[in-house]
Image (cartoon, rainbow, N blue to C red):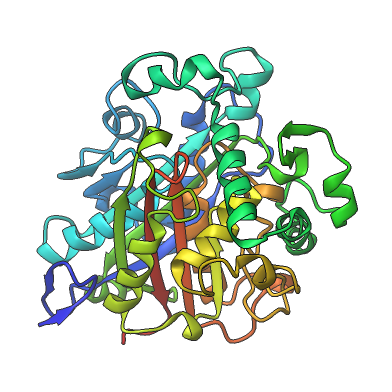
Length: 393
């Protein structure tokens, strides 16, 4: 018996691997997200060399009346294992962990995780608002009257970090500059033209201190990943990527209940995921970290243990996150430049797998063997962190 995520005992051969990944066409025009889900799902299954009829596990959220049943019906699936964990952008990292546990326990053999969103098109058609404050029900009713939007929550937290540790707005801007630098070599990225710190700072103010380029883009998109057991992967032609460690954690919904605006739930999931994988932050070759805002990435890198608390500003300011830097991060351009269709967590997994399989062409990180993938939900409300590798350790 061996330990996979550190949460369940794993019989020999039942460790989970990611066998296939795919995206829907970038910039695809869709009247609803189901078409994007279907396109990405069929491509991921084809990438794995698995037929849709073999899928007996399904994870999806953020869509439909009864997630993930709506998606299962649309895809013609009748899974015996399902997951619709909904904790924002971290949902997909959490679902990878759940799928790994299900495979280890024999509850499923082929798990499809899939997501699609027409967030950008919906905004243009007036079907949704950009203000994700979710009205006045539940705990948020005590913050909504003050106009405390999602962006404002991040902006306030960034200001606190700047006050506590001397982090500068130029250091935060470098996160956006590095993301755009990486996007230049990604033909699927929405924005590829280079930007400077001055460009970021001269943009329209959204929520002080964030100008427009400190904030993620809006896009449509679809993504999918297929997980199987190590035993099943031996019959497949592709290169499997092992799920070496995983962890999940939640923190708060009400900002008033957030103990420290400079520390998030990744401070729990990072150390746990590394411990369960048996590796350290300095062993990681490539990172895919949720970056809805520049501050989100900076603080998450601290929480994961890549630098000490309060040292995130200098850590990101020297080109370290760029392709060719010491720790290439968000190698596709991230949510700041490549794609952000509402929940980006599954797109992080897709890019990490492609990097570990050496499939990224001019943006490929040389000899990448270990990847850290970390998703964040809400306003540092939830975290899911994965350690992925080319070999079992």
